Image 1 (cartoon, rainbow, N blue to C red):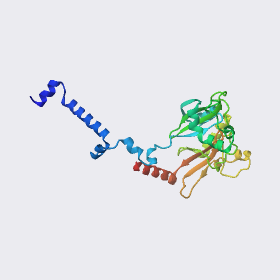
Image 2 (image 1 turned 45 degrees about the vertical axis):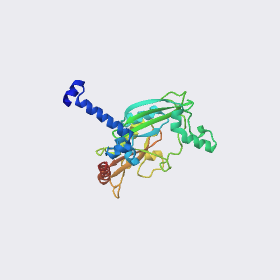
Image 3 (image 1 turned 180 degrees about the horizontal axis):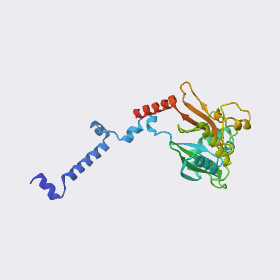
Image 4 (image 1 turned 90 degrees about the vertical axis):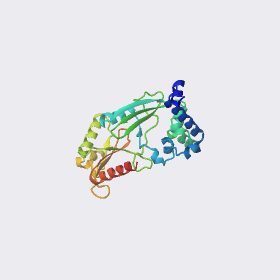
Length: 279
């Protein structure tokens, strides 16, 4: 009787036999890693990735977070004034896991300093006395997360924040961060800043104020400065091609608006291309 006849009479085809044999070999390799390596079996991609340098395990920056005093006001600014799109919102976060995830280091510091955690701005998410709400806003190349910590009795969105805003907002303070928005190449930068302030003021966001490149000593002088004072143009050195200005957002957060033209734009483009080529 032929081998082929045996397969047919038992109802088992060659493909099934080969698959069964392959499964047996795979099982043997799994129980004997040395044998698998001796046969030159490739390592799973996830295993190889987990052994790579830390930078190779990242996909980049996912989002920037800003803690705000008034969620609705901040959301209006980043969506209706600056044109971002809401991704989703979530909130009323409380409980031990989220509390520990966000605040363990601050609680340890409070204990070491022998102070009530609340006095250094630590909310009680663990017990639910305070809650956390978040909203994510999409721009073309980055996501901004708005966060508000509030007392449980305060309404979500329009309620007061748990902690008072910091008095010192100079960008020179260590740990200070800022969000930088990339203005399109064909936009008049001076007019953009003028229109940004005007639209924000129309909505009652009077804290949205951009700096000027000339010296002013009062808010009245700042407002009266000529429009061309809205832009700092760098025309020499490695940063040649930058146009920029610093600006406070509606929550007092530090913002920056920039254009990257000419040499500096090429520097960024070349650096990105080189990184992508390295994989």
